[in-house]
Length: 139
Image (cartoon, rainbow, N blue to C red; front, top):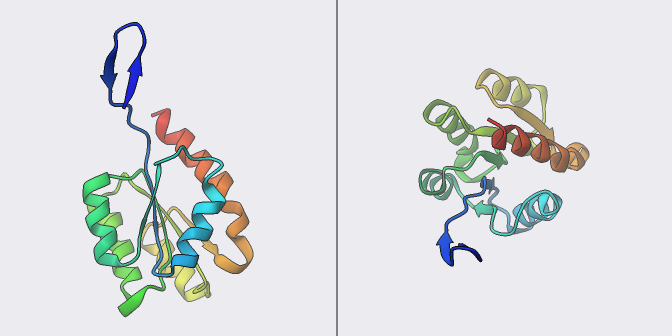
């Protein structure tokens, strides 16, 4: 909440939410650290499982989901598909170590916005998020 001095009223200011889905605490903290310079405090949220992610997607309605498809029980691909079908307005960015051509093609076929290899392409994430947030707030 923000209070404006001329009215002394509290006004809820909504910011686009970025949801990071990674079952590894180190993994989601790394992504959070990468994007904290382009996001506002409280804008970054995390989920550690497909079930947790779906609950948070429903509750928070994030503009962007950055997700690893290598989460327990191989639920990553199913989660990705559910988000794309149920919430087509959400940008889905895959950041994973499962970066073979099979997974790239599968994610592309499911409509993922962007796909990055954790080991070699993670450095692109801050600029990608900056561009997607700019696009989201200007529409």
